[in-house]
Length: 137
Image (cartoon, rainbow, N blue to C red; front, side):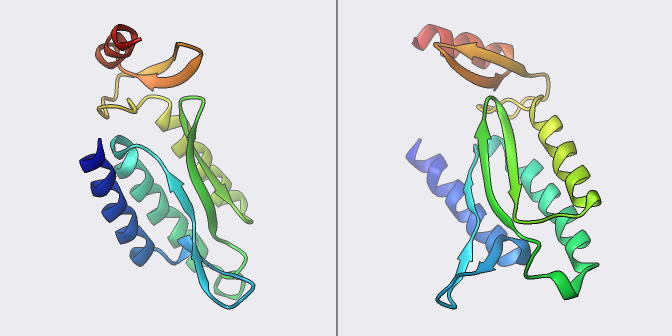
């Protein structure tokens, strides 16, 4: 688990350098970055989504400081992307990614997954990972 965390942290640091929409100005002039807590299995979906969002933001250079990602989290089995402000197109991109995330296993990245409850927690899991979680209790 620690190894996966370090691998994800490195990838997220790479995203911070790659996409301007993950950085936003703080009150004291420092640059802040979006709070990202997702599983490694959903990294590729996040990267593809950020690329689309960045292209959309680049169409509005005069409002660049308004359009940025504040956080990316997993909640109720899906990836949630929160924006400070957005256009209709940006909202469509986020909605599409959140819908796709409902079919990507949080554990292994399998695409044939669905939302499942395990011990009062909601996950998006493939059947194999679901059975493993049930066995672990």
